[in-house]
Image (cartoon, rainbow, N blue to C red; front, side):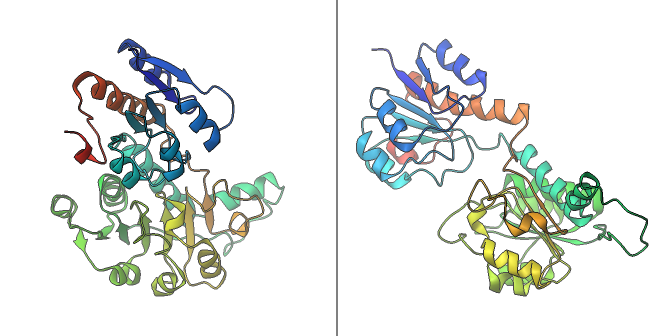
Length: 326
């Protein structure tokens, strides 16, 4: 029996190519909008595998209607949109695509740090609005990054790559906090493991690279921002709900921290009237951390290979719940 794979939107062509070359039947959602959950459920009912992404809601409701699926493979490194416990209960393996976007996301975090430190987005808008004006010796002042301290929250692949960029370009001292110590990263970058409060109080730049979980949701809140230096920059390229946006806005307004660079917001898309968009010391991107040709093709390849290898060898190269594979 031919296995049918549903792709929840238009992914890089390499995914479709690989799946078809492996003898799988492929259905691609080709409308210029995301599928609703009801649409995904209805389509998935007559498919064997789902190839999805982070904005697709693959929760308990989904699995109650689509418990027949052989496998779900996620076009992302994060998977907080998927009810892993329910998938595991049903014996459905869930694959993902780790490592593919490491450099692209680290570049985005590094770029946001520089842009925020020099108020680049705000000053660019001044040109567009015809407000360039005259030279002011004390106007438009940013801050320099050389020899400052970087605090990394989540010292995995992306956190390490961000640290390498900061160390190499600006000789930044590296502190980090994570659930587990990364001894290799410590040795390579002379990085120091610290507790969360120390990370907050000693860092000139805090860059977030953790996954979203109960423990990390809203961890950067009013109390956290109050412990940071008033000269500190907050960077988040991980998940929007890791920071409390209302608290971040207040911290910036009150000068509790100096600036913020965000590739992720809560909600997404961000509303156009969000006050963060008008602040001179804030730079915001529309969640484009992995948006390079190389990264997206690599993500598509890994997600496709999860499905191909499952049907070919009953193995999922990058699996979140390996206990379901017997």
